[in-house]
Image (cartoon, rainbow, N blue to C red; front, top):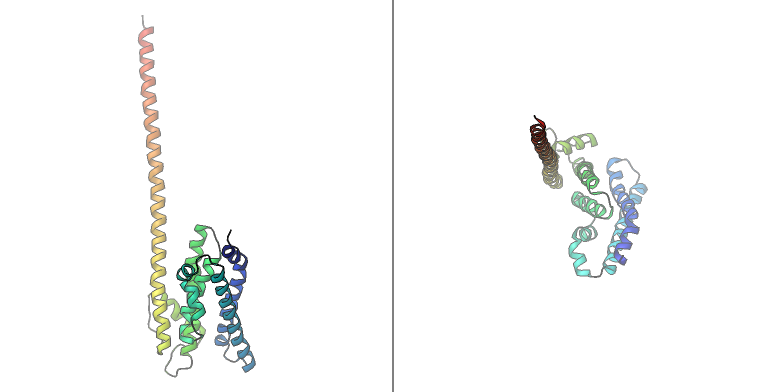
Length: 241
């Protein structure tokens, strides 16, 4: 096992906890607007510290990589998480990249990984998108997304491409978040549709294989019965007076 793989295995849980802290430092001030100034400052510093830890982890992984340029090219999402500034309109993109980076480090069985990735990504994006749009829309006098309930409803209708139109963003940042959720929703629906179709195809193939095997076994039984009948007939003919 090389040093990079060893480091990634040892730090996968820590990275997950750091990612949760990173999101917590942003989400709590948005969901609890009445926080005191010291509390808001503490959550801001939590974001900065967790971002610094991500940066340190990335730099260590680059240093441990046998081929550094190849590592950088193959881990563009991790690089973007480090380089993206802490700007409000980029939260959905940064959170999605963060989910991708953490998912790469957490090892799960293949079938479980597919279920967790699809369902987890959908839930993650809906929650993060709701908080992001609430953050940018709540202070706008023309906005109609004022509570987390409004934001969650809007996020659900946007990701499922239903789009009732009763809630919609009016700011440029909110529309940027909406565009991200629309694209993510279409992609996730495509993945889910493909997964369901693949499951049906697999089931049909198993059923067809079972039918073919059953037919082959029946053919063998019929052949054996025919041979047995022929042998009985020959034996009867020999024994006849």
